[in-house]
Length: 208
DNA sequence: TCATTAACACGGG
DNA sequence: CCCGTGTTAATGA
View 1: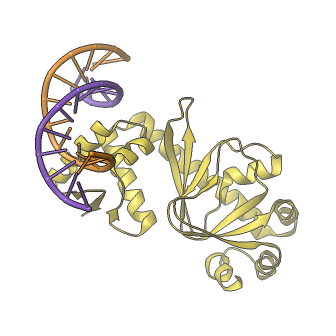
View 2 (view 1 turned 30 degrees about the horizontal axis):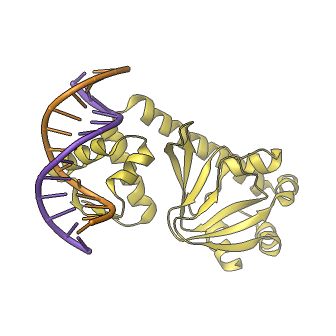
């Protein structure tokens, strides 16, 4: 575990902190498509992403979903940090997008390290900032952009996160995550295909 | 105008 | 056959 930590967090954390993480945290492998966290749940440890990707979703009163943002390696869930420390319920749902490797840190250590390590404090604040920026971008998309632009951004994000230009989703699944209907997604995808932006296949599509 | 809903046909697995 | 896909018609915001 020390090696992975060194590789992904070595440039952020001082040596003593890395070693302490290695001592107290546990490594966790999670298969793609697993629900890590659901709305209303309490959280007892905080994850650092080593490998893979996680999508963060919000749900409305009808149970419809909306994708908020993706987490990638080197990221952590800012929501989890507040929930852990304040002992609040989770406001979001987290589902693994890929097979994912996590380092789980016990809650007590989070507060202890905030006083002990400057790099930890910095990491926590940076994470808040990054998530907030990500969230603002999502709000801009929903409020000011049309569905065709939202769809394109979604597809590009997905390609960036998975590291593959082939997206293995049905139109219906995409529609759920963007909170719209399949008819719209089908129509827009067809238009994008005509414009040579992508190729459509059954159960998958490829960005060009 | 554009999204949603329902309905239908097509075709691949 | 079942499911994903492409399209259309009706309705509403």
